[in-house]
Image 1 (spheres, rainbow, N blue to C red):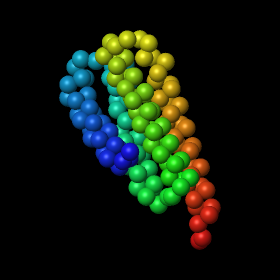
Image 2 (cartoon, rainbow, N blue to C red; image 1 turned 45 degrees about the vertical axis):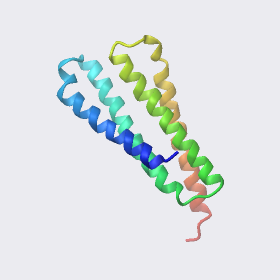
Image 3 (tube, rainbow, N blue to C red; image 1 turned 90 degrees about the vertical axis):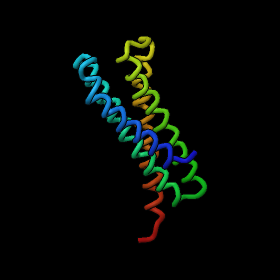
Image 4 (cartoon, helix red, strand yellow; image 1 turned 180 degrees about the vertical axis):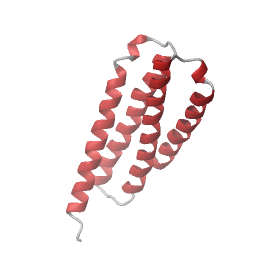
Length: 129
């Protein structure tokens, strides 16, 4: 998967949804739901940019580093769908069973960041100064 393109798409949707939230949803959603929407949108934007960064960094890696970065990309993508997606569904009065999905998305983000840190620590440890 091309993480740079994937990240650009998520980032673009984050801007689009952010504009929609600022101009349309503020008159429709409760203050609590608007806050949840903004959180979901911010995390989608941050991790869209993170996917772009993962794609750029993965160009420097071969073998195990590239495989680990692929896992990071998968975790960030899953996190966006599970965390942000479930919040978008919940604030639009979607099925309540999506509630437990939100923290699983957060866990995907956390695991992705720790794997990313491990890959870069290992890379810089083995790189001559």
